[in-house]
Length: 391
Image (cartoon, rainbow, N blue to C red; front, side):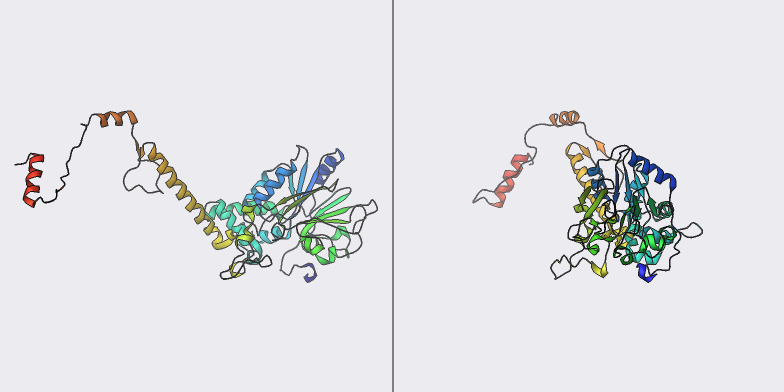
């Protein structure tokens, strides 16, 4: 277990494949349609949307996410919602999904599994709370439904010329005997093996960042070992959505090996926002926040900080709208609070208001008496009585 980078007491099961899905994907490839694979997205929803836009998928094209869609990033809940609803995206299970589903109890309830929470799960949990606008019960119900979907994802896809998997394969075991322990967790034993584990198929995988595979940050890695047809034995796709040097996502066309990259968008660069410490300058090599934070700031207080920020923006927007309405004649009653509903205000008709103002007599209705130099108080008093008609 230790050699596979998984030191947790997890109930790891056998491999799960979907024959009908594999037949559908192979038929699309045979008909000349595109099939893209993407590495670990880790909750970077905005960046993933931008990558989808770059790919410009046709109606019959497909994309496969190689696991680890959740954790670390700012919006895992929104990403899972997109993946479940998108008809052209297929997902594999990764080790982070495997950890997350341990929160689903045997009686169907949800109880956060602490080892998962310590490894990036806080940001996922918090993103569901934010999505539910602070309703913890609703957040848990949505997580239960999503996590059961994640638990039933296949762990590998095997086609005529390619294999798609999250972590890789153990070269010491027959391919058909490998389960979640190998497919979701293996690292060095897999990518440091010199020969191809499947001479007929290129293996596309994520899990291990490409910097550990000997490639530059942000670049797709390819094995130096070649198959008999000249293709690389494996292709590594976890280019690092938060690698601090060239963060982003990458997609590869499995037929042409064309790479499409999308840099991580500014709104998703949580690792830069937390990379500040009082009295110290920023360093690219240091990206941990306070209390060793290694995930998006949405994880703080389980999303309550993000909710507070959203509420603050809403209050500011409400105040701005109120002022703009007042400029065009919408008047709010005294003591009106920003968090109240918009009922209770009244609208003046400009024409009627002008008519009322026109009925008033023109000219001053009050007087101010200025004291001349040398005037005594008695003279000032007599001047005021004379002007006002008071004897």
